[in-house]
Amino acid sequence: MVLSVRITKLWCSQRSLFATSHRLCVKLPFSSLSKSKVSYSVNEECDDDFLPWLERKAGVEISSALSIAKSAYGRSLFASKKIRTGDCILKVPYNVQIAPDNLLPKIRSLLGDEVGNVAKVAIVILFEQKLNQDSEWAPYIGRLPQLGEMHNTIFWSEDELDMVRQSSLYQETVNKNIQIEKVFLAIKQALEHIPEVDHITLKDFMRAYALVESRAWGSTKGVSLIPFADFFNHDGLSKAVVLNDDDKQLSEAFADRDYAPSEEVLIRYGKFPNATLLLDFGFTLPYNRHDEVGFMKFAVVVYRDVQIHIDIPDHDPLHEMKLELLQRHRLPCIKDVNGFNSSRDSFTIKEIKCAGGKGKGIPQSLRAFARILSCSTPQELCGLVTEAEQNDGRLARHPFRNSSQEILAHKILLSEITRLIEEYNASIESLEHVLSPPTCKRFALRKKMAQDLLVGELRVLESASAWLKNYCATLTSTLNL
Ligand SMILES: C[S@@+](CC[C@H](N)C(=O)[O-])C[C@H]1O[C@@H](n2cnc3c(N)ncnc32)[C@H](O)[C@@H]1O
Image 1 (tube, helix red, strand yellow):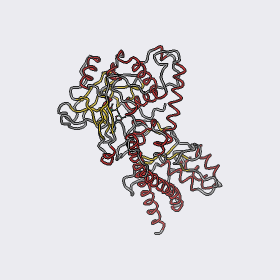
Image 2 (cartoon, protein in one colour):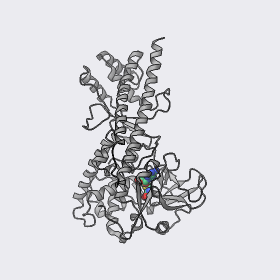
Image 3 (tube, protein in one colour):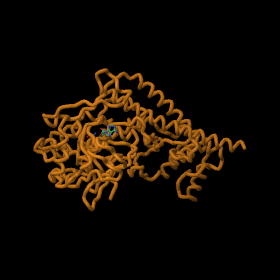
Image 4 (cartoon, helix red, strand yellow):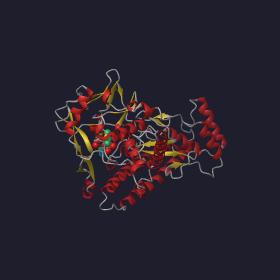
């Protein structure tokens, strides 16, 4: 059995689907938003028909414990009877999942390597959508959220994106838009003569792409949409996840606690910070314990708009030598907590719960980087290289024996983080003065999401600052002994 991970970080027209669909507005529970009446709308299809349809298609029962209903955040799954911890609450066979191999061979054969699995499943959605009621997936396709219901930052206007400019999410969004557009152009060119998909616009493709990213799971087929299971909403504290059983050819989920009938049943998509939730899923949590802050790593990666980076100062006489050393000792690709390879040339800081803790949260690689920055003579740098050769080859992983220099290195980090804290505070304050047009509920919702993001990242920075101050104070007290 394999934990099927959500597919976020796989870098890789709006039109009404059914003439009969109506819209229903559901108010968000955010107390701070109650005045602005931010709303989500949900296609008002009769959801009671969906599970029987899927079970007929699968030829087996999928769930006797769950049913679909409207929640504050679109559709969701609710207990249809009493559920006990450990109960299997759904089993969705692979034969009713949508994967890249659902793509017609005549289309698949035209696509190049630049078109990854997410894009392939997105084309399946677009293809089936075009077939309208003739699609064998019509009940599913018709229940997928519309563009106006999606808040992933790739859909934000320039004004809206400006609200998160302080966060590395801003640049990630810009990069992702470029990436999606590139794939779209490749697809357009390849599928020029396929009438079923030649009509697609960039907006159509972006919606389909975002739907796949926010609803699909990694699978042996690359990426799979798992109808019904993809109506689960997310709770970062839930222990329930979706699992794949390749022997039985099905995906399943188990309850992580007891549920009373009618209670909403939530799962955890992954240990995602708000920046990832916003980029790939279009929502934030008011308090997200997985929040983190990304630091772009020095000048090798120069993004004009990057707000967060630590640079080797140009006036540093050892600039070239440090740059060369850092490039030579580049960190290997690391896996994050969700098992994804992090290809970003960056450091990520997570919240440090206890200022006196052992450094969890300030990555060793960032501290090593600061030690290199703090060197003021070629001899000191050579000393670090020798020490690395005598150990595991990694540069500056050990504290300097000279406490003053260790303090200096960490004060470099502290001053950078203090600067960032000031910038975040200013951004959060200026956000308070951003006026939501009274009629634009969408803007009010996105402003709240921007606030959640910045406040969460500020909390992480403040925890890092407290840790660094404590570390420097402890070392200083040993100096004074
Ligand atoms: C896998 S789908 C879940 C089903 C979805 N609610 C629907 O209507 O189809 C993921 C989407 O649900 C919404 N969502 C899930 N959990 C949420 C949460 N805790 N807060 C806000 N929105 C959430 C987001 O729009 C997200 O992109």
